[in-house]
Image 1 (tube, rainbow, N blue to C red):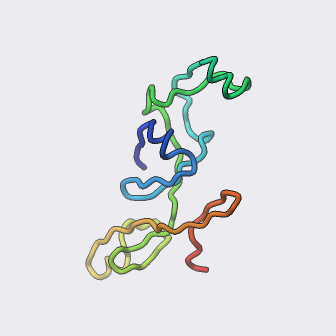
Image 2: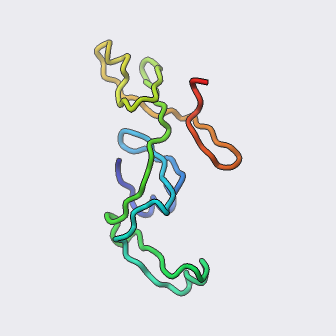
Image 3: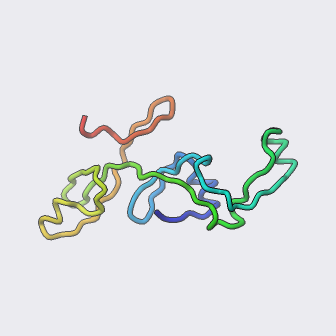
Amino acid sequence: MGSLRPSQLLYHFGPGSIVDMMDQSVMVMAADLWDTRYTPQEKDERIIRALGHNINHIKLLNERPGSVKVRAREFPKWKICPKCNMMTDFKNKHCHFCKQEGEEVELYPSRFIVACNHGHIQDFPYME
């Protein structure tokens, strides 16, 4: 889908954040779903004491950033055409309606989503 620098992943685009990639918008999945098996480990007593005794090491994401595979899911799914304002939740990158008129207009993700007090998030229910 794209790539982020480790500092972006840790400070700006951590789990649950919505990231604009080159041609889509994605939500970063929980860190326990990331593939970090080839990432170097470090044992630092100060960090272990601060995090709790059930932690015996930390992963250094910035040592070999290419070894970290972060899972993300396309979100939101609804997209809008900037020319004709039609919307779709299909995996199209270009507007179907404008294409029929002979133009290839790139869609952009909808900026409206729904979240509840418990932290659940979903696309805005446009159909409802």
